[in-house]
Length: 120
Image (tube, rainbow, N blue to C red; front, side):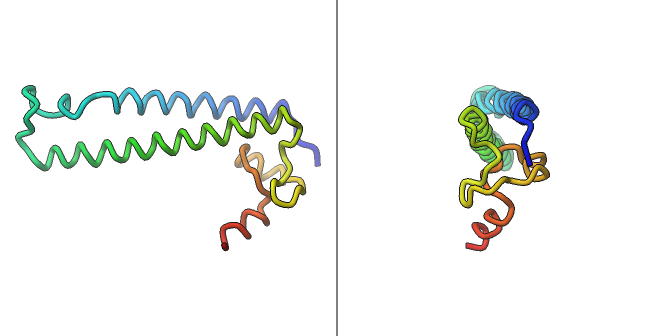
């Protein structure tokens, strides 16, 4: 099996652009202060509204954290392409299947090694 590195790089760059755009949208949304979501004087007249806003912000922060992690995985995969190690399992050094790389272009392990890892 040989992985088409140009195609892999294109997929990773497209995914990187998508994730970066999502991160920017989340950061823009998070940059609004809680006071912007409450009454003009900064006092929230409804405790439930404040709680709802807090939950929304926590969800958005979790999404941003996930996007940052995904971006790091994508960048690491691009580094593996440059280093010539892309498509090889980091655990057993066997090739990662094309199907797995198609579904998850930043995969670092073959499916068997990933299953072993998840079993603990």
